[in-house]
Image (spheres, rainbow, N blue to C red):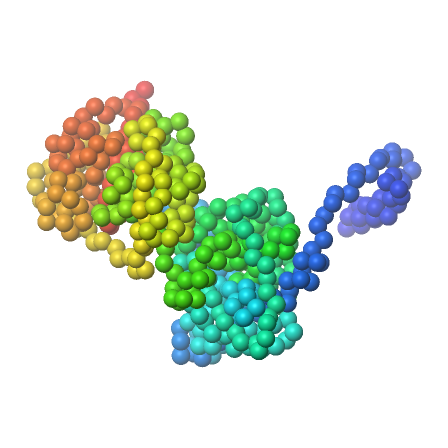
Length: 494
């Protein structure tokens, strides 16, 4: 304890004895030139201009309605809750004013901000979801009833409307596309009910996808701005005093802030505002493909030099992608002039495109780049999963080196699985370590082997007969109505 106090006292001496840029050192300590003070931003002007347009949102529950889920568990690839890399993605829902059982009446607090003088307010959907009544509190202590104009759970935004009998203060909306890691940002909100709390930090990353479990159509802004429960729905400002994001989630194993927070880009939210005003819901664009990462196995099997792009695993029948000639095995490198560096980059770009738009799609097929024109479709508001049947009897075969056996599919089974006649063979059994370690299961349907279509046991044998030790095979597999690639690497005999 004594040594700690001494170290602290000496530090105080060095700081307090600074004069004209020179440190006056204690006896026996060599004096050094003090470094020039770094120029740090002053946020007071931004706060004074914008705080009146930030509101506290109160969602009231009578006890008759089911309160919203307040935490969202993050899951790793494959969606398994026991994934060793799984943390807890939390939407920091409002701070309860009255801790009580779910069936009792209570009020929860969040944040929001006014985007127009006539009383439109943006917040998170999870702040007001299923509430019986919503009110907002302004900085001047006025309390106003709020109407929920429309919500979008996919983007996690909600548009509210209040009437104040005059023009209200409003924020200036910026362009989140111009954000770069390292830039200063600040948040204003009501963490734990402490209204108009200001916190600051920097942009840690942009275009961050949270794994696709909850919001696959949003590329988040990651920051180190301290935000906690009650900050949900509040604005994130740049140094120009413009809103660039809506504070939405944290990444935490404890439920509290741990240095990683996420905001919805304001461009995403504003693209939905007009639709929420007119329709109460949001319509998104759809390409008609399912894409996965270009992982090490795919790179090796397809002889690629890098892992950029999204590997097409499935093309929806009748979609714009199918009409444009997109095929499983194609690698999408760009969409509508924007690069697609990872599979997760594509869904947000397409979702924000107005249905009916004709957009260029850059792809890599058989080692050659080409550009095709795709007409963007409309994403259904409710997408149903496709059931797939079980193993069918019949003459089997397989690959001993890959460690699996396959069986033929009849056309009735293919129709049930939404496959065309002549598509796929069914995995009857996983007999070896290679297939088991890759994650293949009985009941999976193999559609392609190294980008060769297989529709019979004989075709599968032919496609795998030259597989040697040390090589990697890329299989396109249908499981539970969805396609995905599996890379199988055969151990080297050496």
